[in-house]
Amino acid sequence: MVSRRDVAAIMGGGGGLLVVALLHWNKKKKNNNNNNKDLDKNKTRHSALSSRGERLMLPALPYMEGVMRAFFEPYHAEVAPDGFILLAVAENKLCWSDILMPRVDRYFKLENLPEWSSGYGPTQGSEDLRKAMALVMARRMYHELPAPCPFKFGAEDLVLAAGVGAALSNLFYAITEPGDVVLIPAPYYSAFDADLRAFADLVRFPVALDDNFCLTPDALEDAYRRAWRTHGRPPRALLVTNPHNPLGRIATVDELRGVVEWCDAKNADGNDLDLVSDEIYALSCFANEKALLHDAPPLGATKFVSLANVVNGDLATHRAHIVWGLSKDFGVSGFRVGALWSGDNDVKAATSTAAIFTAVSGLTQAITAEILGDHGWITAYVDENARRLAEACVLVEAILTKLGLPFVPPLAGMFIFADLSSLLPLLANGGPAEDLWDLEAKMYADLVDNHHLVLTPGSSQHAKTPGWFRICYAYVQPDVLKVGMDRLEAYVTGLRATAAAAGAE
Image 1 (spheres, one colour):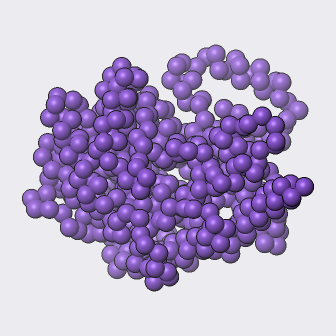
Image 2 (cartoon, rainbow, N blue to C red):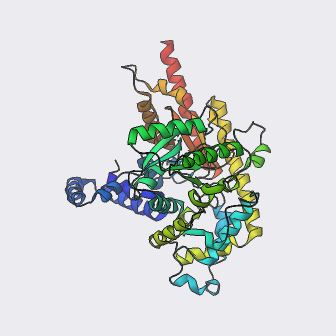
Image 3 (cartoon, rainbow, N blue to C red):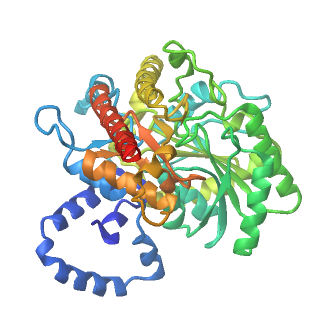
């Protein structure tokens, strides 16, 4: 079992911290005979922590043990055919070995290294990288901005941090007080809980989506009032993700306008409500590529529209904020490059100071700036990445459809949210009625322990009902993904066969 001390090291989702967590967990796993001594030491160290330190000890992800087992005992067709297949990490490895790695490798010539990369620089990040990122985003994400647009996209409008998680943490640290409430449409990315809790000490309050997984003003109003009653203060911010994780859904223009108008109305009534849009999957959209593979009707929009395309007025100049980074769209989560756009100059100044503690290394900034400056390469990469994401997505959809398991058909991201709730009753032991959430946990454990398949349980993503699982299809190569889905198919057919045999007795 992984302790709180083990999993705390991955707080915030940083790649380096994850490595520390894995090494620490593996070391303790190999030294189980020292458990009692470890417990005594932990108890002593634990008592020395402040309330902030205690907060950092809380696990970032409830399902981390399965992820760690998969890291240490991964599947390999020849060396470890019974190894774990990890489909619970939203990381894109489909283009690394043949497209991204050669492009990065080209840069590792010392004569290309700029002098500024080895020294101190602007706290908000180097001008070269901020300019390159702003230009990529303006061209590829915000190319249909209304005129006049309240958002500017120059180097001076951008604050960098070591990943989008760090950018969000810095932003919320700057605009909220401890104990403030943040509304988040659910289901949502599991690590938001840790990202908002670790340093800013915020309360996360889920907002229910409608039956079509849309975010409506009525749902926002209901959650706002319930959060105020429950926590004794009005919510301070709304955090949306577009494209959505774990749904893979792209918000429509009307949906975004409804959100903006609701926020405007709240602030017009004298409230302080900021709107934050996490757009980390903005360049991982594949509606056109998927349409070439099959003609299933889309759920939501087919083309990404940013918050910047619809926001205006005071919300745009003071209370709207956008984050984006390279981890997902470019499959380089280990680079730790995230960016914040804000319409408020004070927010940019405050987060620039916070960025001293979450800076991107000079070497990483230099490499990234050079790559993002090659717009011909960017276009070719984004198109090929979309094609590969669509192919992997369709592979998973085909198996789920064959098994008769419902799912939300994605058009973006690198995951599918699948409904396995029909299988939960098949896990009941015939005794007293078991809680369905407990059965979901039982299914997760069964898949990990007996089938060496790791998915993301819906409970960790605040799903409305039990039985939902997120399947990440870009973390492994297509041949391994196929083996993973074969394991899921064997598990499902086995459950059904066992239940049918028991019913026939």
